Image (cartoon, rainbow, N blue to C red; front, side):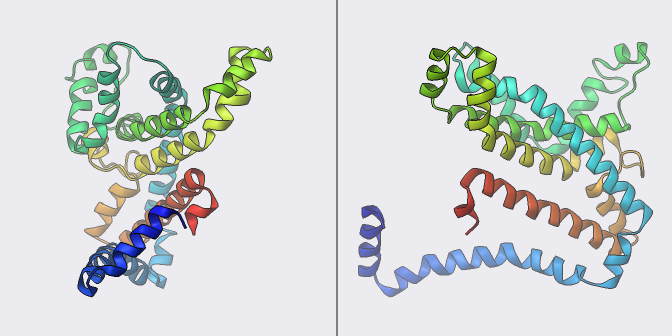
Length: 276
């Protein structure tokens, strides 16, 4: 136990009983509030109707589409986001704060607004829409639109995590590799990338789960067409109007994915102790 922790325990022990119990009670209230909806979802979802709904063709189509688009989004995020993360982590340049703000803005931007922005940029009447149509490319209400919508709202999570990962790599190790004769690519491959890998993988997991759970931007830009643009979250909305068991099956499936991502991200960032 550190000195700070011992001092905190001493101060807490001297405080009145009500003062000591109040933070615990408030914390327990918040934890309970967060746990109850998840437990209710598991409780209501653990039945034959939900299990049977997993074999529904619409559920399987939504799952397959979500997996495909999410995998593609993560791949694009790694290819395009890694160079940007390295630049933000290692270089100082004019306008860096503006770039960082632009990267983080989609996190704060309401997803529906993001979808409207994508329509105004790439829709048929958007800024680039007529130019794209000249090449026979139509993006709105297609699977490509799902990927673009998911990418817009999820790639900031990858860039932020990867940037932190690259910032955590000691410069001394890279300099030592250079002194030993390693070139720029060799240093990155054998020193920088392995040390930054936890941040990269954590960012990929967070990016993937955000893409899989995207709703507003996808609905506005890609629509809700079964088998074509209907992802799991959109399928939940549709199923709630007609088949509660199908909606529960989809919701449980999404929650299982989210739980796996949270556990994986904590393991990558904090190691085994983070799971205890």
